[in-house]
Amino acid sequence: MDQDVLEARGIVVLGSSILRGSVVVIAAAAGPEEVDFLKERYGPLLMVTSWLRLLDD
Image (cartoon, rainbow, N blue to C red):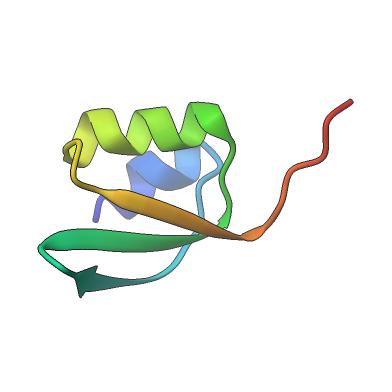
């Protein structure tokens, strides 16, 4: 993955794997904006899960 590009957006990838034909990315924290960015960059079959959950204001 493009570590510099992801870090510039505050996205920290902890790991990745393949599940049923999709790539799963495990991020430290990923809200809707980060997920949208990742899917735009790497394709709609990308599945994103995050270790931390973002809280609403």
